[in-house]
Image 1 (cartoon, rainbow, N blue to C red):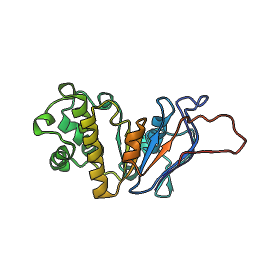
Image 2: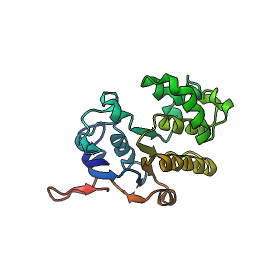
Image 3: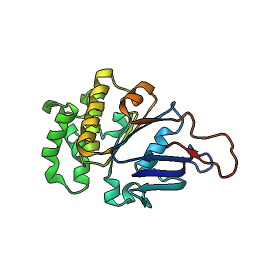
Image 4: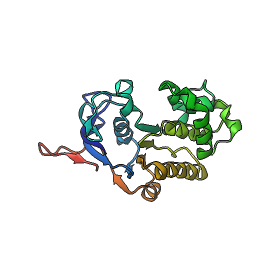
Length: 230
């Protein structure tokens, strides 16, 4: 189980982006986090993926509180998550060929010997042809690069996928292909999914349940009141 309890987070303690928010994603469950741009969805997703330390509140993974974040988190917690961001060109090293981009997490965790087979397997899964694997980000389209970023997110076989506006910049056919690849992976592994977006139709079709979140900063409430998004 992935649980966020009473999380407050932001980039300046005086003006939090997320305040007193709670969220749960069960193993194998697909949860959509739906809301307009700027409401704090991405910040909460980064907290859930252990990429951003909250100012207060608790994140629990399989009932154990998370105490360290980003590269300081224990490897078994860090590698439990695969994350796909909205803008692939901001999350991909422009110097790497796509094959190296996909294999990057394997090399970072000392598993280089798995790279060739795993990259070939995932390239087929996400719809990348062998000729594309030798190209660098500036030599492929946004959709092709996002396919590689999804493959990179899957390469360590994570138990949780965080897709933050994964299809927002893509055409309908590429979006459908990426969603299908995520669902194929989930069907075969039982991974949980947190899908963040503002496309109401997509999230309602894709996810088991969708959380409608119009604002993460509630109006002043009575002392002790909490905002839950689970």
